Image (cartoon, rainbow, N blue to C red; front, side):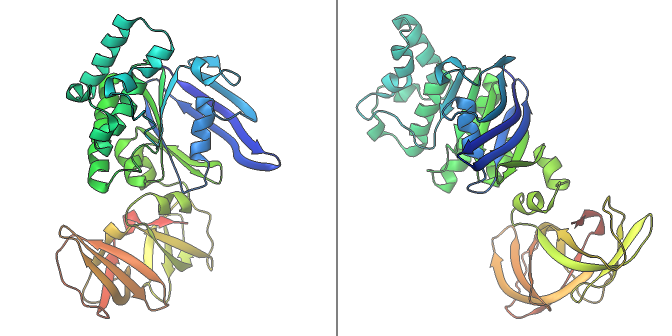
Amino acid sequence: MADLQLKSIEKNYGSTRIIKGVDIDIKDGEFVVFVGPSGCGKSTLLRMIAGLEDISGGELTIDGKVVNDLQPKDRGIAMVFQSYAIFPHMTVRENVGFGLTVSGVPKDEKVQRVNEAAQILQMEHLLDRRPSQLSGGQRQRVAIGRAIVRNPKVFLFDEPLSNLDAALRMDMRMEISKLHKKLDATMIYVTHDQVEAMTLADKIVVLKDGEVQQIGSPMELFHKPANRFVAGFLGSPSMNFVKVKVVAHDNDSITVSSDVIDEVVLPRHDRDVAVGDTIELGIRPQYLEPHHGELKGSMHGRVSLSERLGTETVLDITLADGNKVIASISEDKVFEVDEEISLCFDIEKVHIF
């Protein structure tokens, strides 16, 4: 396996900058997920690592060797695409071993490596079937098996689960996670699904408009987002943002209030604020709880939608100023549309932007 370094990587199409000076260090054996909205440049960045896109600027190093000008076949990588890209006229065995056949690997070695990959992916019983006889998840395993037999330094996954239904995606997430632990391989995974990012990654790289917004572990990004974009992108349902005014502050605390939030004293954050400033409070839906009666640090509104999901109830609440917040509560309680509601929140878990 190998480590990777991306130093000031850029990608331009004419005068249009797509990737804008990206710096990422990926350690040997890490599972790194590139995540962000459509058009943020995550797949372009992955294709540059693979050698399928030219690098306009910067330096890409794999295992200590600069590979900017190397062909994809010489980089020691294997890529699994969103499309399975398996040959319909070949059996699973032939599809998995196709790259080895093209490379001229001796037959005995090819058979051994195909059988080893099939065993790792628990698909020995599928080797003599054709793709038309396989489910979507099984076809994706074939594509992954084709990557495994190459014994690459780095595995690249470009939204490999987006064609599968929700239940199958969950199963395949578990399979890919197990595969990473079994192979102890360096893996880079691209997705727009923040649930996949949170459940799979050792390290998440959040991208927006071709720039890195934050790099860190899933829980580090969840609890300590670097900016409003990261805070709103990671987490389901998304974080609520409520505008408030700073009415007082000292070295230890900030006092804020608004038309929809009672005056509340928050612990001092590392933000440069002054009395009279308008700031935004970021409050995750899971940290909003219904409260009956008056309470410092509460907000008031009316229920506009109630979704009972069994283990939780998700409330869409319209505040007095017309803005909306979402509360995800664990108790299985019925709330009627237009019902007045007060919500309290833990001041220790509030973010300031």
